[in-house]
View 1 (cartoon, one colour):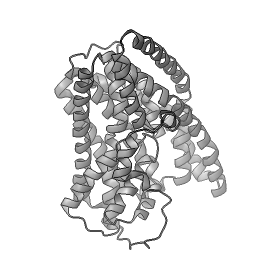
View 2 (view 1 turned 60 degrees about the horizontal axis):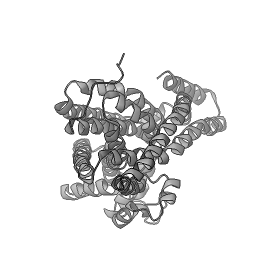
View 3 (view 1 turned 135 degrees about the vertical axis):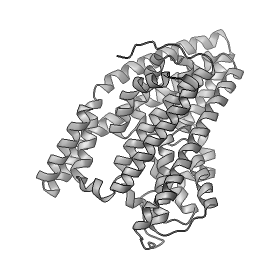
View 4 (view 1 turned 180 degrees about the vertical axis):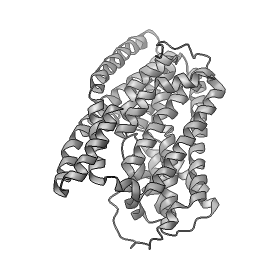
Length: 404
């Protein structure tokens, strides 16, 4: 929190006291610190997802347990995703924020710099299944790693004593990677300060003035989504939902300040286990959540798509808007929880409804601030999912670490 405040003050000081060239130089150089941190986080994501998911599936014992827990997990994910999308639709239809811009349609051949080819429905289906696990690990393709880990974990559990050797080894690997993550996290406050100061130096307070209504509306919707998710979780885990929020608050702040939900992933495993979720369920639910349960990103995709359509005066019927929500829900699965990933999904969806993809350029200037909120929401949503599924399985224990 101190680092975030310091980043805002530093960024504003540079914005008001530096020349344009000095501001660009400052932003480029201090942005290196954030890049380093995110690269170190990405360094541990693939081995951590693979090792923890395989161990979690193997410890479930049999294929029926995997199917039962997986079914409950996906049911919660689908409900949360639809809730996020519908909330965004209701807010944008009510406020019609983009209509105030009244922009002319751009030339059809104008470039956006964003390639939507990877988010077609056919591309999504085929992309689920890795052609090489080493390629998936090297590219941090979380959904592909999850698919291979499910097969690998089930097969490992099925071969008996020989499989236990592999499980024990991967359990040790997960412990080592978590220790490495602990070292990396010492750098988190510096990275958070750098990320915030860079965007504030370039945009300054005018960033908030120009798009203030959009930003405030989005953040209000995010807070509403948080409230709804927490209330829904309280139906299952009662007042412990408050303890859950306190347990993961630092991870939410980390995701918020770095605009990356992946930054919080490694430590989030530990915090959920401290809350009382069994490691085998956390190791199963959390990696799936990072591919299937991006609640904040879902809300943003609805906001951005409808804002751009309204800005260019593209008429959409309620039926078209609802079908857009379903397309967004499908094509967003497997999107990495890293900055700007949602923009690629939105670009692909806009083309299906003849909405100018160039409209994404309207949001690039404030995307960092929006990305911070949706990344934090993704972390909270996946934490809630792990706790609820643990409760459904009757395995939610008392907190292993008392919250002070």
